[in-house]
Image 1 (spheres, rainbow, N blue to C red):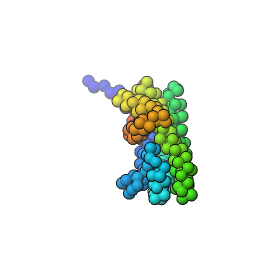
Image 2: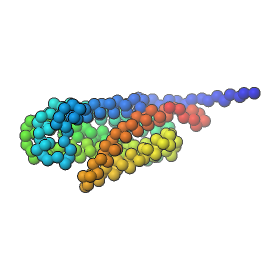
Image 3: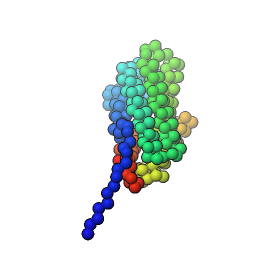
Image 4: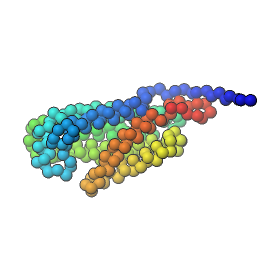
Length: 234
């Protein structure tokens, strides 16, 4: 004799699908990197340890590429902010009242703000008058790098940590995703040392690019409905 157990699905969270929003964010952000890489011609975007002459030569020769990069980077901050608001709203919808959700909200919004600020400074550097003044250019470049480097990876790590810790305690996400998120978040917080130790620079991309994949995975796997009886569904 076979018995069937019926389940009743509770209300569904209302909001944009976070997995799709995260994907849009990543695509627009990566599209912004393409114009200033060697894949689109030389010279490439200078690193923070380059002499001012190299930096000035780049911004003089590739102002249009930098402008496109700045525009796309600025625009990508919008879906990141939407993703942050949506995920935190969904966590609260699922009954989360822990501080992790607020930490994620702070980290995500701060990352988006710093991205807009960094892109705005980058846009200012495309003007010939700025590129020709080495002291002004060097100041603007350092500010842009601080906001878009550790200013990105540190709060981005907080966004991931807030989601991962909260989802880990409540089993909203798979264990492998929670653990990998905590590792990425830890690297993001350690990238703060790039301000003091230039050799810590690789920690920034080690936070950024794996973090992009993590954000997309978490967005698609985080449940959006709750079955009465405690079983959650994406």
